[in-house]
Amino acid sequence: MDLRPRKRQIQTISGFTQAEVEKMENLLIESREQVCDSEVCKKLAKTFTRSKGRAGKPIAKWTEVQAWFQNRLVCYPSKDNSAEANQKLPDYTEGCTLNKANESSHIPKGQKDPQLSDLEFEARSSKDGAWYDIDTFITHRFLNSEEPEALVRFVGFGLGEDEWVNVRKAVRERSVALENSECNKVQVGDLILCFQEGKDEEKYLEAQVIEIQKKLHDIRGCRCLFVIRYTGDDTEETIRLRRMCVRPSILGRP
Image (tube, rainbow, N blue to C red; front, side, top):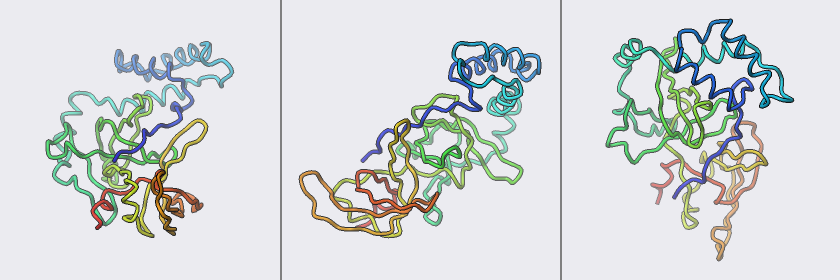
C-alpha cells in the first residue's frame, strides 16, 4: 500500500529561478565567507536581472540575495559549530514511535537506525499547509523556545526547496493508502490526507471524515463515498477511497 507520488509546483524562494538558486548554492560552497557582502550580492543581483531567464519577471533585489544567503548559512554550519551542536542534541532514535495522542513522531538523528529502516516520514510544509514525503533529514536545530526544528528535503525536490519544519508539530510517520477491501477501517472523525490534483500542482491536504456513505463494491473496486472537511479552511468535499491516505494506526483496526 503506497502513496501516489507527491509533487509540488516548483516555486523557488523569493522568486529566484532554479538556475539562480543553483548558482547561489555553488557560490555558498566555494566562498561562504564572502557571500553576504553587500557588493557581492549587488553584483549577483545585477547579473540575475540581466539574464534571459528573468525576462518578463521582476528585477532581482540585492537585499533578497543577501537574505537568501543568510538563511542558507544556517543550513551549512561550520565544522566546529556543527560538532558542538551534535554534542548538545538529544538522540531522537530512541523516541521515534508514533505518539497516538497527537499523531506526531520524533525524527532520527544522523544516519537511519537499523530499527527504523522500515519507517518513512512526512512533513507539513509551511508554504501551502500540505504534507509531503521526506527524502532526507539534513540537519536540525533548537529555537530560543527550545522547540526542535529539522531541515528536510522532500521526495522529488532539490536543495532549493529544502524547508525547516517543527519536529513535534509537523513531522510524523508517513500516511498510507488503503486497499479497496479495507474501506471499513475508516471511521467518522478520522484525520486523513486527501489527494488534490490541480493544473500545475499535486498535494495532500489534511481533512477529517465527517460522514461515510457505504456502497456496494463492483469491478472498479470500492464505491463508498466519504464526506470530508479540510482542517485548513473547513471546506467540505465528497471523495472516494482512492484519493485518501490514512494514519498508520488505522491499519491496526479489526
